[in-house]
Length: 614
Image 1 (cartoon, rainbow, N blue to C red):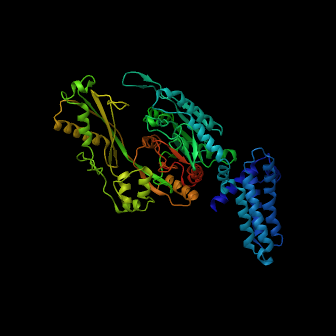
Image 2: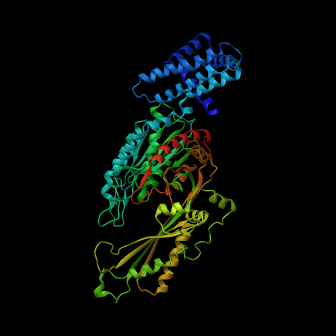
């Protein structure tokens, strides 16, 4: 009711201030002749109407009907004459409701209709239907434009913005320009900020793609939301006789069984375009945005966000983040496939390269095999002693600083809607490390884990090449949790690898290098999170799960660092979307309902966030 009254009041204020419209002209004349402000006149008129509606009066039905008919008739006729007809569905709904009330009034008892308490609430109810923001007409607009949104996502997927491929640099630029054009259609002021060129290990300088920044609205009375997303994608290719690739062309969006298949559909082009679509809906419906919005869309996220922090640092120095009140990222996923969640924690990362060298060139195994300490054998030994078959990390002291589990935290995991068997089937695993839901989730999110990713320098092509590689590099990472210091973990890893190498007695050279990033954990009761949780309740009609994520999203910490404000992770993708993998998809329902949830989030932010909140 508070929202309805506030929204109606805003509509009335706008109407009486519009001197180009009939209502504004009338109140303007009253202001001139009486010497009283048009606001005072409006308050007096509203008071008189409320008194008439609230007291026993034979003319009260006529007054209520005039209020509920005259303005809607004018707006309906105007909408029928308009080209866009974007609010037709709203007014169709209005007249259906009005018809039902009219039938009720016709058959209700005469005495009942003159009960004072009936007419005032009825009038307020119909006034609320006049107000687009209360009515939620933007959700109806979304339903009417689903095919447009699917086509738009298809356009974005068709742009092969693979940041890891230097040959695709032009596609990265095209993706940035495409998104910039879409943002500018509804008035966003955009700029493409190019980071400094990156120097490779061989001394070559490589030009980096731009970071797309934008601003929509600058009302100092409104909350300012910073939205982050990325427009680059992972490499992808269709399956052939030699590779296990996609079932379809990865850069052609394919709709099948309610799923939208395509590279970047869920990571992260789909969510980015969902933001664009909902804001466009507000614009087309001429609904005032409840918040100011700033955009930060990068094109190097899949390659380590190279250059982004330089841009963020420069923009902070320029004061670009000064008015930001909170930030939101939609670049992660639900814990399951049916129930939405909101994420408050991420694990950190310690990524390690172990390089073993045995000679100065590759050797023929038939000629040199049996005469040298082979680098590959040493590396396999080292990697095999990192983690046991149950997933336990074998590096000493690695668990020493893991926070103890509290009973409150355990209950939070137990309450999450998650099915271990469905999860197992969705990823195609024959057996999980844990059958208990809480244990499985905790080992995904709140305990460290070690994964071996690959070996470079060794032969992996087709055929039977019998070569002894001179140098091989093993790659593995440890996901870190709160209280684990990344630098300390990197030191423990390096010392352990050296110890293993010495114990093996190999004379080969072993070099260890680690890079790392810290964890992220925030308060689930912050107003930004409360707004997100309420938005999910409004659209999905469920209480969202409060989750942590096993992966790392470094930009979360970067945004928190440079804005000094709270960051929320508000996913709209499902757990089985297969981001980074073959046959990546985005459920059509997630796409459409996600837009509606993001729109509700705007309204909830305006209500929950107090300006300049720390």
